[in-house]
Length: 407
Image 1: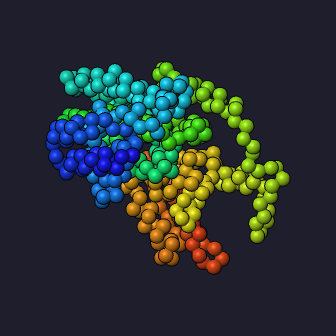
Image 2: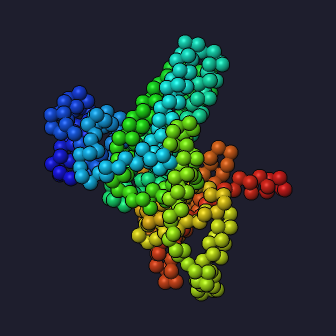
Image 3: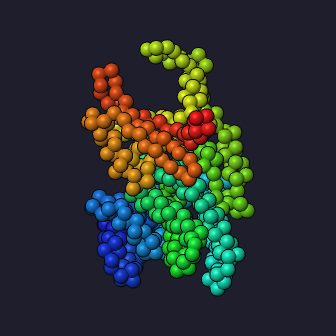
């Protein structure tokens, strides 16, 4: 990319962060750049972080940034951006992802906005319950964001494009929080109408901005960096997480996604990694890969191993995963697998393992009516040298209930 153009764009984004008028920045943009590519925007956000701008500052200005560039994205701008629009291929993960955004937008316009307007003029309990049902249904968008964060972001990271993923993940978390806040506001007694209105306005504004950023910026970037095998893996793993707002959307339904995947798998004749006679020799015994895999997946825990270089190398695939894991996590920097606000916590924990300050940590996580026990252990060789971290996660609510019943 042209470094001068990226520096110019980064400077304009920085001016917005510092509170300069969006109108002045827009005028400067039109005079200096006129058109940019999605890749240039990604490089500009990376430059902001390299220049010391905090990720949370960029997140807070996310909507301003989107408004500034939304009419200036030209993805035919560079030859490196592929000409084929994968979002037009029925069932392709890019098509499904964009289709979900179309479904979300229709839901917001046809259901959420209309019920909100009705509730504003009629604060009866029935109208409140209709709006509450809409707010609760919005939680489905979490599946869409989880697929983005766990299946698509790794390909940006492999290409060295980390800032856009961190910024979007942080905004996803803001949207999740606002969705829960809207539900809570509508359930509150006595109801505070102004609080409902403020949360609603912030939530819908962030959702609309994210739709634009995903369609016009994220998807073009992904099409620039992902190969066919990458998209096939995304399609395979997507069913582990699920889809949202895609019913009735042409080319984006569950059946469309499965039809596309099955078609790709018909020509996937790659050999199996191990033969049936392969044996893994261990100091205390031997196992075939099939036996080892089945044994680890039978344990009532999730296991994840991060090597000494902080790269995820393995996770178990049991029937009852506590936290969703997908195969795109393999080879991923562990810090980029977490929401931005958790990265300092994870970094400090692994630092304490590496320097020998501690060997384990146990965290209890309450999620609604369930309790998850997350245990972290430093993995050391026979000489005490740190070689990685293993995370062991188990849902223990049923165990506690059983003990309480029997005691």
